Image (cartoon, rainbow, N blue to C red):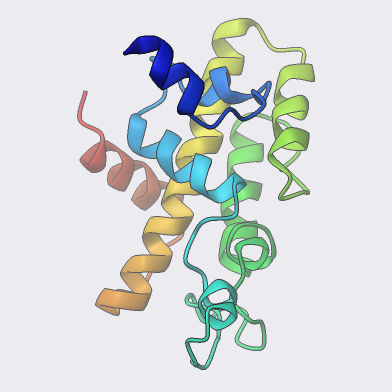
Length: 164
């Protein structure tokens, strides 16, 4: 049975960053979302339009009303996301990610002169930030809840979603 499974399953090349997101110190819901994001599988407006669903696409946060919602816009180009990445970079006294390419972000984290525990914290915080951006986008889009970008509200929402 095991040999049959091995012969039939699709084999994909291993990505070097997989062990960075699938580890004990990263909550699985962050890992799943990040995996979907970096495999271009999140249901943003541009993806839905490519599947033939007609809709008027605008920034869910209302911060950039002229932009079509795409993965790049949601996580990198939206003023809401930019402010969160800048806040996180300020906390770690480093520079915010300037790319949507996960491999570049991963290399940037790995190359930082941080001790391993601080790298783990930076990785966890970065993946948590991706989750917060997507979660707040969905709250705004589906529940019409305004988003407060103060660092306190982000920390409170993370603590509420991830009890220790």
